[in-house]
Length: 407
Image (cartoon, rainbow, N blue to C red; front, side, top):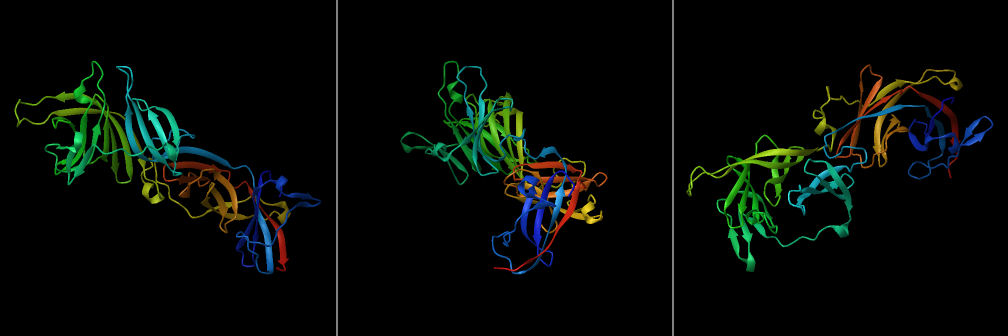
């Protein structure tokens, strides 16, 4: 066919079913140049490598010219800010890296799982800018240490020397507890370098609280019940910054908060109200669960939700070798281990849209005048949006019917 581009050729049985994809997005160099065109060879096997029964088969396909594919946006994952950023699917743990120099800001370190099932470590500065990313091998994963704080029936116990336990007073419905260790340097208050942070869910809501290892209450953060709820917390040595790992319906979020003000007790007695603290969010990064399209359809921030279509009909270029007959083609979107691609309704692959491994789904829909095809795809970590134009720049061709005698 007189079209510059790639060729996809399939073998079809008498009922029109595709039994073998003989060439997928091939070039002329992938076939043999003969006197009257291009030739290729079929061994009589189907796509599974099994011989097909004897009978009549046809060879036909499509020449695909230049198609315009434009990446539009990334949705639902604040960790992915560039094409080469790891596709973080879930944050597993977090910690502060304390600076050696006084007055220097701590670094936030996160261990996360990617869409490919790999483990990576990401380090962010105090403003939330990514400093470093490193893949973690199994051998480099830390071995668990003996716990120094435990939760039993909502009560928190601190393990001291010799195995003695000290109960944190007033806590009866804790869901998480973290003990912060740190050696105090000159000029730094030792009282804040050893403390216990507790997440407690009460009848009035969820609170994050700080206690000294002596049991003395220090600070609290009240959590808005309409927001994702904290499941883990860690703190800087001076207790003036905390990292929260939070979860809500279909969302995981990490926030760095900085202490702005502390209001003292109203009276110096045992019945005085607890210390109230005011916290400011320094940065926040969220991951929206995107295991299927239905989970994210109305959460992508688009002016109108995409209406998925199972097929998209385009009118192709007329082929002079087929008497310039006008041909229509029903396109579908599909995925495999290499990415997303357009195919015919029979299943013949035509054009690669993205080279994105680990995809869980892809959908398509028409927008604008109907000539623009919008494609959304996700690997479970992020939703990627593409626009495809010039889909009519294709031409059908027919390589004839053949009788297969079998083996």
